[in-house]
Structures are given as C-alpha cells and as structure tokens.
Image 1 (cartoon, rainbow, N blue to C red):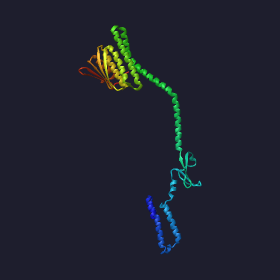
Image 2: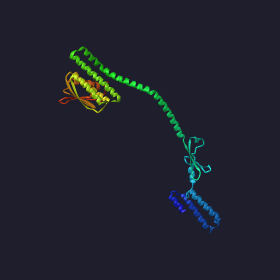
Image 3: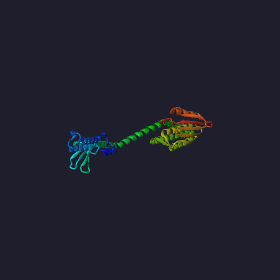
Image 4: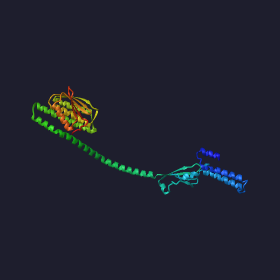
Length: 349
C-alpha cells in the first residue's frame, strides 16, 4: 500500500478515497488478531481471507490506486466526437453519445483506424455545415457568373454613355468660357472694321492676344481634366505665348517660377488668369510697361514702376469676380508690389 501511495503521489493522482484499501488491510489484520480470542469472529479463514483479498483488489481498482480502464469507458461514451469501437470479431464494444444515427450519416465523413491488438476505431465527422457552405458558395458563384455576363454585355454601352457625358460636360465648360469672351471678340472685330492705320493694327493685336488667351486657357482646362493637375511646363508654355503676344503692346514681362512640378488644376488656372488679366490691363493703358512676375504656389506677385489707375482697375475687376480680401499692394520705394492670393479663390469659367 505504501508503494502504491508513493506512486500515486508521484503521478499526482492521489485522492482521499485511496485510504479505503488501507482500511481494508487494517480490518483484515484485526480479524486475524481477534480470531484467536473471540469465538464470534471464528469464520472460515480461507473464505474470509479470499473475501478480503478480492475486496482489496476491487478497492484498489475503484479508487484508482491501481491503474485500470474503468474511467476510460465513461470518457469514451461522453466524448463529443462520434466514436465507435469494434473488437476483432467486428462486434461493437463502445459507442459515444455523439455518434450520429444511421439516417444522419449521409452528411458525415467516416474514418477508420486499426487498433493494435485487434479491433477498429471508427469516427464520424459531421460535414453538413460544410456542405451547406459549399451550396451557398456555389449559389453565390452562379450569381456572380450571371452578373459578370451581364456586365460584359453592358460595359461597352456604359463606356459610350460615360464618354458622351464627359464630352457633353467638357463642351459646356468650353462653351461657357467662349460665351464669356464672345463680347470681346465682337468688340475687337467691329473695331478692326471701323478703324484704319495704327488703330486697326492695335485692334488686331488685341484680337490676337484674346485668341491666344482663349486657345491656351482651353488647352490648360482640357489638360486638367485628364488627371486634375497641370504640369508646370504646360503653364510656362502658355505664359510664354501670352508674353510674346504682349510685346506688340510694348509690355515686357519677366516671370520667375516658384511652383512645384505638378500643380492642382484649380490653383494653376487661377494663377494663369491672374497673370493674363493683369498684363492685359497693363497693355490696355497703352503705355510701355515692364512687369516682373513671381509665380508662387499660393500667390502671384507683380512688380511695377508705379501704382497707376490701371492697377486699381484690375484690382477692382478681380475682386468683383473672385471676392475681396485676396489682393494686397505695397509701395517698396523702388517699385510697387501687387500680390494676388490664389489659395482661396475659385476658377471662374
């Protein structure tokens, strides 16, 4: 008993009920002692010894003091897996409570494993949820295939509709710009028809400047529609053509660029409009002008010799169109600085 107790302690399975085999031994010892003194306990020694020995073995097995498979049967029956144990002759020995009925085994996967010493272990895996998921996925796949066929049939038509809508919107934007500039074209045309000599030549130069601005403004707008940005090279090219057309009015502009390589379309178009309208007002004064321009990411700065009336006229027209508080003028002594804030304004058509 001492050896079995020590073994149970080492295996960490010792329980208080394991004292029952020891009690059985003590009772047998008392029986052996009192057998010689008390006639009442003089029962057949062989029969009594056999009974105590069998009781001792049963207690050792029941309390777990001696290893047995007594608890394994309960563990097998209460398992949450569908298990069946067959002996070597094919008879069922143990069945777990999770084993499906015969009708429900259609949705189960059956696996087998040979048990050493004879016998077979069979277990059932419920595949009903997997089959249901497969049916759902197959149904979703069929729906996606139908949707794909429908999209393939309609994608060409949708592309045509999208392209037509895009062209229509671009046409409206360009027509709005041309509608705003049409009165100037009409005015310059009539001026060309009714004047002669230098006045007619001056009117032709104005019409050429207006045509150049219209062309470059439309090109920049269409470029911006491609990606929502305008490359600084495109803006420099447009400004160069405007400056070339302004030389006929004796207006000379020197531009310094302080902008990133790629500009947001709104800011780039607003900077271009500020540059062209300011230089156009300078040309309208019909006085030789030299203008130094700094094109920044958030502002455009002009340096002129003096604050003339045409500067006030341009400032009034710009603020009327784009809102007040976006232009500031400073007298630097040697020149007048006019700064136009392009970070808050909106591009007008």
